Length: 235
Image (cartoon, one colour):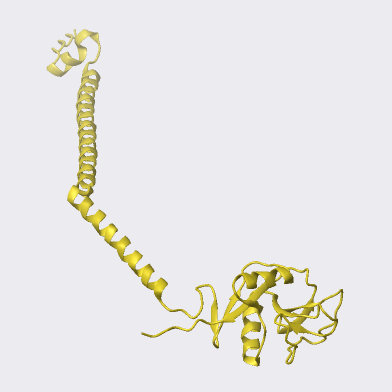
């Protein structure tokens, strides 16, 4: 007869696994993981909070530095008064300089051009021939009379850069007989090829291109005035 073997008492490990009738080893692992997770979360929260505090501190410090820099650039009352005094001094010097410039002896006015003892005005607007004559007379001058080849070259080149310009020459009194505005007859001429041709009652003369051209006196052109330069007295 076989004697049944005696059941062995469960060991400590077996007892832990059999508490409550189900294993507890897996539960212990879960609890440990949960604890570590909570600890990690606390550390992460603390780290984020610290970073935010540092950022706020840096922002505040930057704003404070900017305010201090701006305040340091505000001029003092003494600096302001000094600047005002310097400005008044500058205005006074400019006024004195202007007076000296006005008293300088100039052969021609500021907006006139000096050439070989004469003053020339090259208009910036356009008028017909008759109004151009009047404009020059109002300035104590004449619509320009060409008296030499050098003068012709100077006038032609200057006018060419702007556009056609009236001179003081016409045949209004008698067709084909050209006279200057001072009544003198034409001696030397610098007509363009084929000119004058009197197409359409062209009785007034203009600088055009590289020479002279007869045009309708009603046309609007620039104009050139001429007068003698002023003599400077030396003391």
